[in-house]
Figure 1: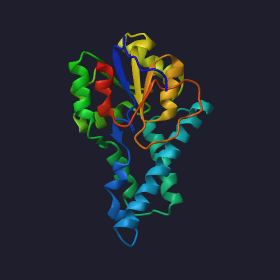
Figure 2: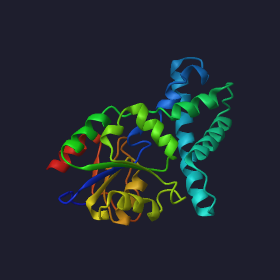
Figure 3: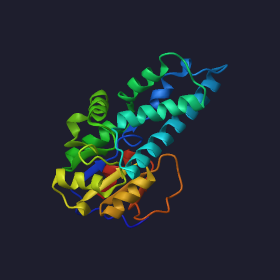
Length: 236
């Protein structure tokens, strides 16, 4: 990782899903409906469903961007869930609707509220920049109770294309009235952190699951294991 001298940073901009909000929490709340002989098997099925759902969600977003056939993230998320459930032969009546509704109220990671409060007390602007639709993001932020510590919640919808398009990262520059280099973009997705860096932002990769670094343009300035590490880095 590059040197992490963050002097001059004015704003922290966060990815939403997987970074602030735990997308695994939807399936984790539906263990009883997922089948399996015991709790251990049900947890395995929840893990498999979450992984495939997320993979297809990102794939469909990218493929739609390449095709110029944008649909909002709610539709993309539903299409991805339908594929994942069919692939894993999960056909419990009503489960698809329940999972989609749970996606609107995903659990925030435990450190998120205090981390945002610390950043705001230190004078940083804070924002979300996400593939999520405005309605999805509003529901998640409201459910987590973090709206009071955010200056902006930005969806890709105004530009009609998904990350990692540079047009998406430009939304944060325009809304916060900050130069790209004075924004620290924070994501749990390595590809997202690389893309923000290539755009000209500083980037922090919250690598909770210890994934290998991506071989892509740009490079995160710093790798952290938890968002709780962020205020201390910016105060250093």
